[in-house]
Length: 202
Image (cartoon, rainbow, N blue to C red; front, top):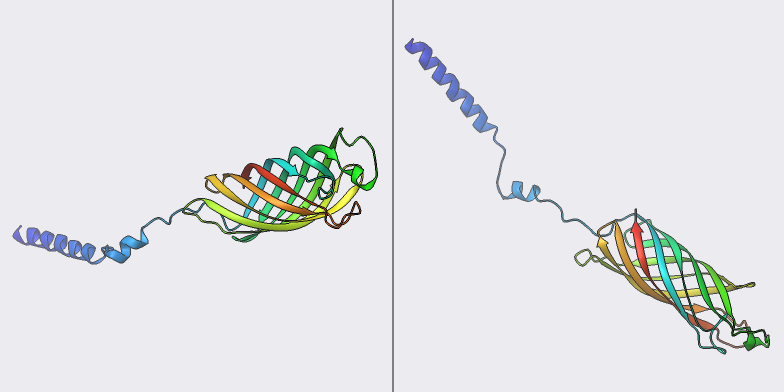
């Protein structure tokens, strides 16, 4: 009986020693490896859909481009970021304003409202700051503005986006300078477009 108790005791001791020998190391390095990585607000690759309001500021008739004085409206855009800092955008904008053809000798009733549609594309560079969920950005591109006839336009702009829900939902605001070339017999034809809206991220 004593031999049985002694043998059983030795078996327990050996088992305990073997388990002790396979314990996982719990030093500082192990604790560091268990730390959860802080989440980011901006993914390296993203699809985005924008819905925005817009206002265009003319300076008619000499330097307004196709719009005399001001125009208001909105639009939609689809963006794709193929890297953390770089993306592409395709955008459609609809504005209600006054036509500026009187500047070129076309004396139609330019006081009546006219609809302007723009289709443009942009290359975007952004700089995400995840600790603030904020991303300033700059962009440049071009396209066309139409109100019965089409005019080529190129632009450069700057803006910022704030993520309300990381990687899901944001708000943004930006402004751009539009250049139309010499459409009305004036050397410089340009105006400014401002946007503010909601951005859904996929």
